[in-house]
Image (cartoon, rainbow, N blue to C red):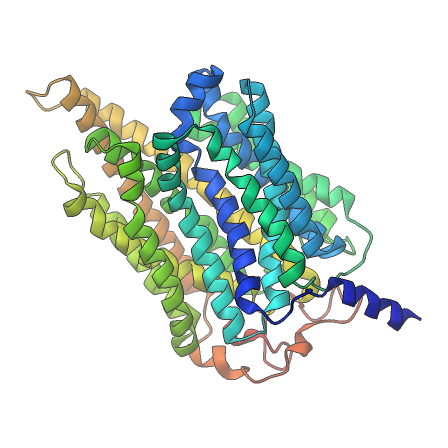
Length: 526
């Protein structure tokens, strides 16, 4: 009876049109792309949104921040809910909420209405995104097929953050800002139709839901993201900003204690037992900051110093996006030949080189001479390093933990973005104020503004190099397995990595170790 019931459940979870790998991957990629796009596409439309809905200069920042706060705050919960209730189910539920919220955002007639809809968009994305990433492991065979799928998903998501600037500029120039929101609706509806056709449900792992862990995880993430957002917009001197970090630390300590005892934790601590995976999570936290700051700084540089229109400024990011996508494909080939550690190191060095070049910017710089080449270099570096660390994080993770691993991956990216941006914007502000006090003689008012801004950006790019140095240190100390060991278990049976029911302790189901204990280490770089 039980086996018959399990078979019926499995049949309902299978894709109706199996065997179409391209369609399966395309559905997942479009979801990740849409969610990433929504984080940046609004930026260039902000002036028109402010005029239409009468935002104050301070409240306008929350059009972006409300989405980021809801997304970041609920990511850990969203990923674990997919593990327990079904990843395709939560993927579709999150998409449904995202579509409805996007429709209401486009129809907004007041600032409060729009901000509420942006929160709902972020919540929907928090449940859809980690489930989408976890579904890659359920629908693609371990090995080269999954490597390629993860590379495409990783590259497309990172590229979406750049393409958002281009699309935002196009919509702002040619249509109403409301279409920045409306465009999500047909995409989400199409994905809801495609998902049951081409995506098979992952195995569900029924368990008592960790309610206390869920509440604490939301509290930790919300406090951190809100604190960093406040720091980025208003500096580090606010009492509210400062209070967020000790609050997050206390909640995190309680969360660790609770999760260590939970049967089905929201944040399985076993995921962090493997040194290489922990190092990869930390690298995501570190490296997304310079990328976010680069997008923010260069957008201002193009428009406020070089005089580009919003649309032209968006199009100027195309070479970076193309380099990022190309490096994602190249990374797959390199991973099979040399292992993860050299690929991550090469990517970090390229990112650092691009930042050093950008730090040489001046008021006389041109796009072709000072921005194009370093942008391409950074795109190559991000494509190589992010593909390698993402693939390592998800390698060897048991089926019951893939949603949690994916949500923690996404959380590190978002925390890294707001953390890095808050620190580097602070550096920019301090350097700009210093430049304003020591202006060269003979500048007019416009020249003063450009000089101050460029001086601040140069300091910000220089400080960002420190992030890459820290990421390099983490890689060298935390990712030690030689390349040959990455391939040693290539032909072993992947089933040995999946523990039996109730095996929360003992063999580390989320942490690749020796080949005899876990057959999926061939792509772990630890």
